[in-house]
Image (cartoon, rainbow, N blue to C red; front, side, top):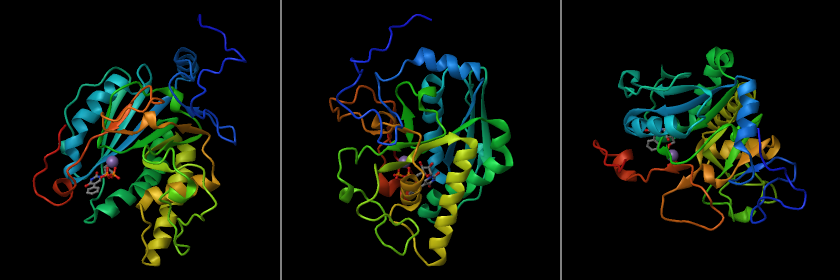
Amino acid sequence: MVYSKPHIFKPPRTDVLTVTPWLAPIIWEGTFNLDILNEQFRQRNATIGLTVFAIKKYVVFLQRFLETAETYFMVGHRVKYYIFMDRPEAVPNITVKAGREIVPLRVQNYPRWQEISMRRMEMISHYIQQRFIHEVDFLVCVDVDMWFSDHVGVEILSEVFGTIHPAFYPSERKAFTYERRPESEAFIPQDEGDFYYAGGFFGGTAAEVYKLSKKCHEAIMADKNKSMEAIWQEESHLNKYFVYHKPTKILSPEYLWFGERYNPRFLKKKRFIEIPKNRSAIRNKRHLHVKL
Ligand code: 5GW
Ligand code: MN
């Protein structure tokens, strides 16, 4: 394998933070050599599980999500798409490449959208213990109202990783929308926290994602017993978890971006993009009109 040698006085990026104070890399375009990483993960024959929930109307997002994942997600590696659905028979009929598999899983539906979102932690932890731990090395857990528009590969994989939320990368701590009520299990004091992480993209080894999802689920249930719900549901609990269990890698907002119009200089790639939703249509009305 031929590639240019790393140079001690020529950091590839000087415009962004590429390592945290606890020495976890922050993944940006230009900071990694994909050939080296692909070789390492191929040698391990790593299998990657991608978990995604498509309950009720959110099934409309699956087609584009899966088609673009086939083009950009973990190309050349073994992939299992675990799709949690209330109606698994509605899974789109997509032919996937060799070494890749779509696995629809039936899960219960909840009437409140907050509950649909939060219960993902419970279902992920349950299925890891039951099944995923025997089938995959790494798990990547994402929102479904998204599409892949550029490469997302093994550079993201690590023991446990989170993604910097695209709305908060330049923010001061006090602007982070952490849960601020001390009674909640998700409470983070004003002078703590490193980044504001997005609920829609996290992962790690099956064992680490099990610990994370179980802990978040237990915290959600403890709040529920106090008739509390954190301000941003499971995202608040994920942020709390990461204050005290630091991620071993952090994905830059390249890995979770909103819309195609806003192009800040530091953003060299938009890899995974949120589909704009008509909130009232998707949340309340019978028919859904989203631009897919
Ligand atoms: C429905 C209405 C409001 C909020 C969430 C839902 C919903 C979410 C749903 O009906 N079905 C469903 O499968 N979800 C899952 O939860 C999807 O995987 C979705 O991506 C995830 C989080 O909900 P989002 O994407 O609406 O949350 P935001 O914070 O990205 O807008
Ligand atoms: Mn979303």
